[in-house]
Image (tube, rainbow, N blue to C red; front, side):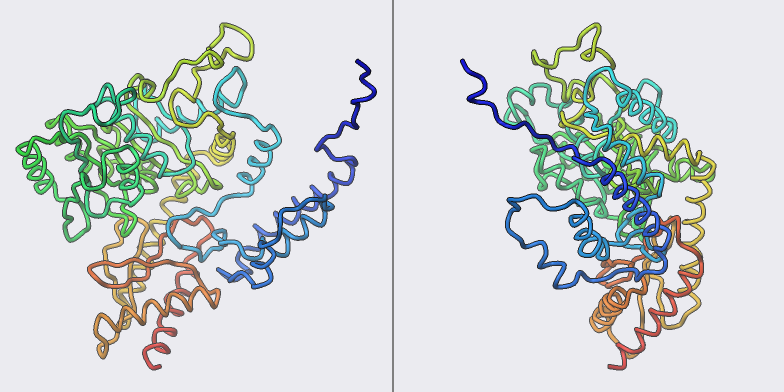
Length: 488
């Protein structure tokens, strides 16, 4: 065969001019350092412009565009309209602000382009190191297992899969129809919706999640839990999992975890702790008692990108029994067989401990951040945020036109503007308007929730850039805006 007749010009995605891409890369790096360092000088939030939104409604590109022009599109149409959780007055949802080192680590990880699933290469060992450190932070035994995932949702789902599979031994082959009685999951009415999604995804169904009432501090009521368990047993159901909250998303409430662990043991239930952000104070000696019980759990989920300030996205799930963890996900196929030597050797594949076979090197930014700062620095920052929440709660209580709606027991402050002339329905409308104006004016970015039917402004302080003066500005702005809205 004449190969010349079928020869085509070969190409690549590598730059034709490395010096140009190097210069552009340095510009990008400088621009991003400027972006992070100047976060306080920008509005706390900025609505995307009509032009920017329209720029994302273009047809699929057919021809190449100069890389510098592509970057210019990013710089002018994307970057200015970020969520801006880097800002010192961003307290929305529960989002950490990331760091410059985390940004650089993501760049390094992306350049390595590692698939951290299997094989004998260092990213596998880095993730194992990060998981070992997580065990130390949470008081888990060194023999426990774990895996890094995208966030709390997948971490909670992973734990639920392991719990379900150890109760229903044939579920991987026969499905949920193999169960002899309905599995029941228990958690407080404050349990995060991602757990409910997980219960649905693993085939148990949200109708089989028992919402246990909470007390005045929004913590689960153990006596009600015990009563519901007995009712389900009498009905022929199988109580199989109790979810404890280490920091509820609404108020930061911490359930009595040690007591829940005892109830789980007495009833043969799996005990899982959703500690998406509120498990992190486990690193503080003064919070050991309040968070006692995490170390007793069968599994715990928490996020690094929340209260440990690591850049999005990275979370961790720890499973006490490594064999149960592996049994829930491992599958033997010829193209993934572990070898004694070569690239196919190395640690046990992470694909044996979760759903993903393709996995990025998210462990690198955790590893670099923990090494750079050390636990002493993280303890200082977590304490700082807790103190800031207490400070904000104190400011609210000093103002007659503000009401603290829930105790600030951790790092979340829920409050609202009040006026004696307004009923709750009117106050809900006023506080919603205050929140939207806070955002639109770029003053601050708290979010909201409803507590006992009251629309409240909710500041979740997992921000290492926040200062007390930022909280002073928030209170002053809420009062001023509240007065304006109430008078209109």
